[in-house]
Amino acid sequence: MGSQIGHLDPRQDQKAAIGGDLMEMVSALLLRPTDKAIPNANRIVFVAGGHHANVGGTLVVLDPSRTTYDPTSGEDRFDSLEQLTPEVCFAEAEGWPKSYFYSPWPLSENYFLVSFSHDPLPGGYTGVHRDTETGIYYFDRFGNFELLYRKNGISSVYPIPLMPRFKPPVLAGLAQTELEGEDEGEFLLADVTNSLLPMPTGRPIKRLRVIQLLPKSRTDNASNPCIGHPDQANARMLLGTVPVEDDGSAYFRAPARKPLYFQAVDETGRAVQGMRTVVYLQPGERRSCAGCHEPFGAIAPMRRLAAAQRPPSIIEPGPDGTKPFCYPRLVQPVLDKHCISCHDGSSGPDKSPLVLTGEPDGRFSKSYDNLMPYLRWPSDTVTRPGKLGADISPLTEILTGLTHRKYAELPDEQVRALYIWLDSNVPFFGTYEEDDLQAQRLGLAVVPPPLQ
Image (cartoon, one colour):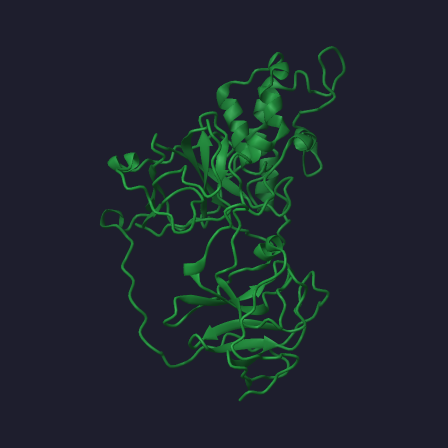
């Protein structure tokens, strides 16, 4: 052993600090189903693959016990990461690798089975548009890198030992007896104001929105079909809202096996903080969190939580046009009733050149296209309290300003419906299926497929 393969330069006990721009690193480091726990180490080995290429790259070890957020930016810090193969650059963040690793299988902290390719990383943005080949290798921290199997014309991946090393520990079940067999679970939030980045003052949180992302169904192109103005957006639906107690706690039931995220909403109906990740429940599972984007290692307050002193809340459905989202059902009726008397495209006293009618206009509608200059959606790596869609969109100030209210003062429930839309990345569609897209364009209701 100890042979040098390709351009690799194995070095003993190599440890490299991760350089480069943090924002790019966050977008480029992707955990995949091939990530593996290292036996008896409480750490994970994974491939740091690019966002716009095949999933190959450098080998990295994650130590979850050292995971932290930067207190200023709110982004992940990288103290918890160790790059095992610094001779292979971070895909996309530092360039496109001239060779790459794939599908590691840790034997211990020091010894690994792994797939490796001498070819450059292929993918849509790498400039390499051909099939590449991988072989299976033995790799360790001490400079050894040995070919185990390779055959021309195929890629050999996912090396797996055939003999069990040990019996993995049995984890205690998280299912609650009274919920077993249900298609639901429960969430308990201790204090919604417990946040790494400070929540804005004077905006107490009254409710949580529960939103479900809908998995892509037809294509692997993130922008096809196009859901709305934001690029590469997901279809989603608002399941509804649940109350937050005066002490910041919430306790509620939610559907199991669905990708969910939450938004903390103030008394005006605008989201103050929101998630950029998703969380799942298994049937009968009860999960809890200390806060809303709380610092790593935060614990729940040592007090009786008001929400825990009552039965769990049931999600209260949102307005029509949110399950799934459908602009012609959620937003256009508000415009038709209160806005198009001035914004119908005609000329005359009190008429505006901004047309807000619902006629089709290409893929979307006239009003949806014409409102775009007045819409914003968060684009930072992390969400920042007080900086979600309804807070940063100029449309909010127009709707609530004195000048506009002289002509049309919207009922509170319809203003809240617009806030839901603004806080949810201003979607036009809430589906990927062509027949359902056509139906939604006409303002017809659609039902998500059963798998969703």
